[in-house]
Image (cartoon, rainbow, N blue to C red; front, top):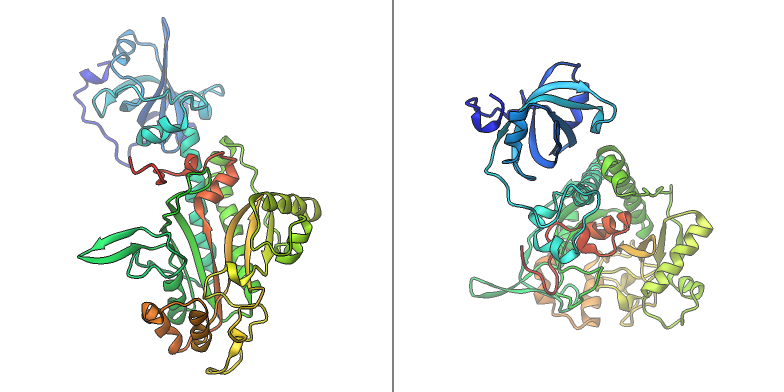
Length: 460
């Protein structure tokens, strides 16, 4: 019995019998072992054939010398799923330091069709459109898998870091009844005959739930109907959101953001080290405190007009270069953004948290103040995070909604939480794909997104 087609033994791929590629070298020489995975590559030579098997843990080499086995391998093209049983031989030249010899191959699927690109090559030869059109297959390439392994480890670290700080993970609705949070860039849907929208963020819900749990976070999709077809924009992305109560100001939020990013970096180091190495990722050092610059000083630093309402991409790059030279930091927090560029719930600079309910509080009258208790965190030349302190008194919201000419009836459920007592609070959101793209140096954010949605793509 030499080939899979001639085997009457049923395949056995249970956890008790299967050995992962990464564990083969831990087995003693001569020990029997069973692998299961995809045929990653075949090298058919005259007297010997090398087959590389790929599973979730990596690659392992199988050496076939039996003529009947070699003949049978012609019917098992790349990407066919197989089980292989053989004998372990340690070999420093083999992937992982060990290989399987005297193999018996058992196919677990029909022979696979040729993939849209040769997945065994070290680099992916096809262009981005091919990669995205055939994502279910092209994501199998080790380099493409590696990008999402880094994303997965980042989410794991985010959850772990905030869990250790007594945050409660929440899940909030992605179908909402109003589009008043931040402009008109929303996707409208028919909701049983009513108008509804895909949520742009969990912002309003996570604020409400601060009144329940004090500290909350969410990892989930958000939707932005922005007509941008650029290398840094997606219509759907994964947002890592956090909100916490009983803060003094936005600097307390920055401290939690720092803890979250440290957890993400350490999780990559622990759970995705091989993926990071494969992609040449230079993991950042997360400082004990982020260097901080005020928005007006940032404008002066880059030679921009004092009337500029925001930082341009060129400004962000220049400021990051300055932070690297001045502080040896990949991170820079820019605080004090103009209120005009922040959502209605943002607290102004100098916000007095202790003013009794019913006073004018931190709203400072009808005119919005120049600066806000908010920040952007720049990472290697790109805005990674926006966060800050929120308003928390009903009187402040009444003034903010009047100033922005927002109908308070549209936010009745949200405002109800503040009417029944909310602590001073704030939060932030990290775009997962943007984080991974910056880490890996991807030229296009779609390269590190599993199934990207943008202005032109709705499949696969």
